[in-house]
Structures are given as C-alpha cells and as structure tokens.
Image (cartoon, rainbow, N blue to C red; front, side):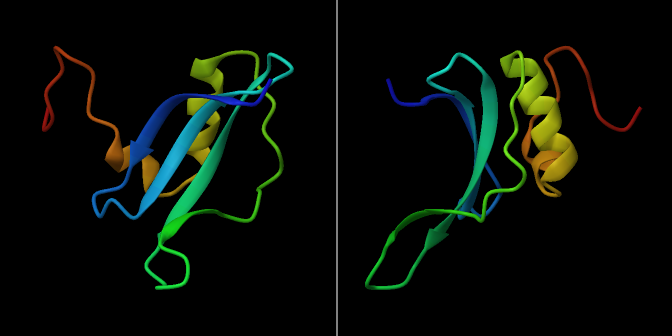
Length: 86
C-alpha cells in the first residue's frame, strides 16, 4: 500500500507545498514539493528528503514540518475563534 496524503498545505505563491502523509507502515510524516515551470517537466518535484520524519500521529507530523519548513507557519490559517494582532 502506498503512502496516503492526509493534508496538503501550499505557500502563498502556490509553487511550494507540504504534504502530511501516512506511510504504508502506519507511521506519519511530511514531504516538501516544489512546482517546476520547466517546459520539459511542468510537475511537482519532491525536494531533497530531509531526515525522514517518522511520527506517531498526523498532528506530530504537522508540528515537525512547521519546525523544519520556514514558510509553513505563515501558510496555515489561525484556528477558528482566534484573531490576529492580539
């Protein structure tokens, strides 16, 4: 069974994204991809794999991704019921 994508989070340009995945072995992790505009590709390309993340839950995988991918925190909307600016 292949990995299952549970959540996709894109940056503001739509050219980078993080996939939160459930691996075939039941563990969770994340992948970072970048869109290639090269006429010979025009597809999503997985970035060089950071140290493989093996997490016990989807929430932990997301937290780990937020700590490793610099643009990700800004791409996630605040939870409902909160407001920015204090």
